[in-house]
Length: 352
Image (cartoon, rainbow, N blue to C red; front, top):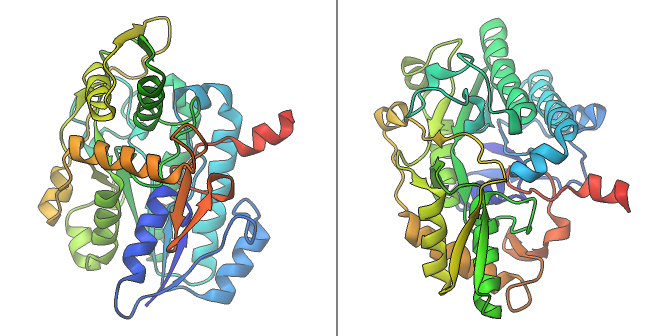
């Protein structure tokens, strides 16, 4: 079976690719961003028609934390809509019958009941700080569902919670909360800083899933027999949540990270900075009923992520992270479209 992984140089895409490469009988095809710009509709459709993969995994996106979402809202909605339309639409035009689309838990309303079930989609107002990105992800889900209903394709969607682990982006301002905390506390420990200031009140609760678990869950869902997937979903509500089913406050998370990296100074919280949604915890009962649950504990996963970052920065830990892709190490500058590559490369180039 031939698999095309879009976003293979990102954290999740890379983890999925490595699992596929270890499979007997699985053929994989990839393209870097330099080789294929997923915003280029003509190029994407020509590539998919030429390669004719049996399965497409769309793990490519423009993503980031609160700072990046607030700073670049137009980039987030425009580029994600382009990528999704080109890859999903191109897959359909090329006759690809099975596709797996990776979304995000930000698709759910800001104040929805917790834990968030798949049925909560489109039942309320989205979190303002990442609304453009969330709308793009919802559009991806609905594009997959619409093609299934109208043309009988088998296009599936998985909605992960916050992801972290080897290959993450540790950018000091544009990354997600966990890698940002790991870097900040690591650097504070190295310099004996008396205090580390964390954005927000520390009260919001978040759920975190290790990327190795996410890769395993993604392929588990992609491999399900069509009849089994249909039995546990609905034509207009076909996405599946992927998470651990457990959450932690940002304050607790900061203390766990500090302990992990050996920081012994004070932890302060800047309440003038936005918190985001008060709580985000996924209901993962649908996935559990299908037969999959997460395995990697949070403390163990954070320790591994910290270790990976220290070993792959190429410095004492303060420099730009390196990343492993296809068995080789490459600079963070060369990471292409990634579900977890948060560096705003295009915006940086426009400012230069």
